[in-house]
Length: 232
Image 1 (cartoon, rainbow, N blue to C red):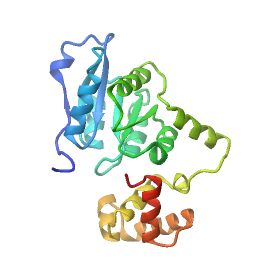
Image 2 (cartoon, one colour; image 1 turned 180 degrees about the horizontal axis):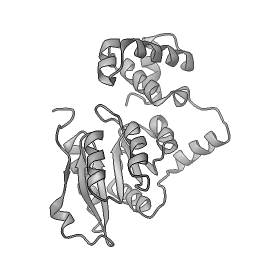
Image 3 (cartoon, rainbow, N blue to C red; image 1 turned 30 degrees about the horizontal axis):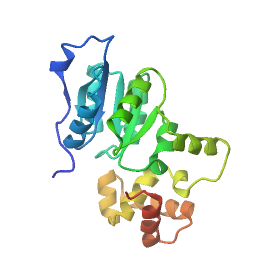
């Protein structure tokens, strides 16, 4: 199966023509797997007041949809091809600052949740979440609130009080992405190509990662990534 789908962006016109804008929550889904998008849509639409109005497979498609239609909530996958979900989140804050964004990921809260909230997301959901959780999160976001699990609330409290945090939480978004690709066994040139960076820049990121984590090489980075959930 392909990892992502080109040209997948679309507005669900059949639904939008029959929706009362003051009665339903219009959702934008952004994920590079059509099966995931369709599965999330089915779960969300178990609530008669929620409709998925648009779907996109990557950041560029998502931005075009946001520019052409009005959504009440966006759900964005962290791992997107090209510009990743965190980078798209940052762009969304500029393009449509009032649009609440929920992040969706296969990774545990430990890895991306705090950086998602710090960059403006109103909640973080894992892909094993049940329909009732997805619906509750979307309703909370549409009502101007946040969807924060007790575990994430505890981590945010620790961050505010200056308690010790995991080494990977001190990494920048780009550094975390490089770490993940190194742990997956990708070569320097492959990483550079995937992230649209020069090999020299990737080498610099790797040096920073080693310094911040206190680790000594790619093998220990891979072990660290598995133990912390960066590799799910």
